[in-house]
Length: 330
Image (cartoon, rainbow, N blue to C red):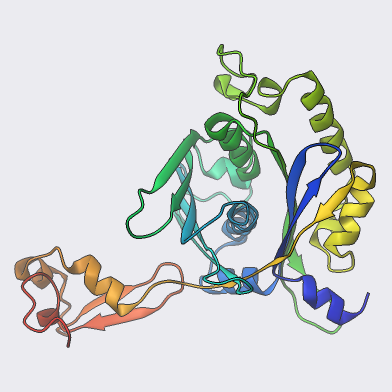
């Protein structure tokens, strides 16, 4: 494979369908976009790994939703890792890239980098939020932290909240090509059984942790056989095949699922992107009185705000902020 072919698949999500199994899926490769996401912050390696996994999940899930605006993933925990938040902005027009951003909040004093990264989250919840924009009611689904990884949390969410059997196989880490420096790469495959009008749920709780639903609780015998077969094939994938760049996603699908009649669709490019702006900061502060704004004013006489996702710094004249602003357009 030429370097040009390698680059062509970087930062893309490729949708596919397994016609013989009634299963759809996505193959994602993140390279530059993941490097940009992580370069906005000086995270410890443990946090970088969790953010990388979350960003990859976001790319895979975001591409499955017909978005007019934004999909968000959030993990909130009681441990050293307090929050991991990601956003996926759908392309504004056909052919344009989707945008991804991510952020993590953690207690550095409590962080144990020798421990399993997922264990640093503790108890909490995994949430998916879909906001289709102005005039639309946002959707939110929440499931408990469970399963031993962020990928397992996402699988539990789809089984429990959407009753869609879903599987993620991901890998991520520092990579280095000959003659180049180290940088982050990630790759993964998402499988999802096609939605059914009447999923087969017993109503007696699931077989997962704390009675949460799993794929086996949702599928009938024939569907379950197809699902197990596709998952068994996915189990044979090697990390180097997922993370690339030597194996194109189309070649990977043939290697794994050639007997399942894989069919691919147009790939979706993704890039790092943030939606923050001075106007949005002003709008968020518009609910405060002049007295409230005064408490936010620094000794230098300005009100400042920093974007947690991209690090952008904003500074404002306090007189131009809040619902008592003297000149909100200044």
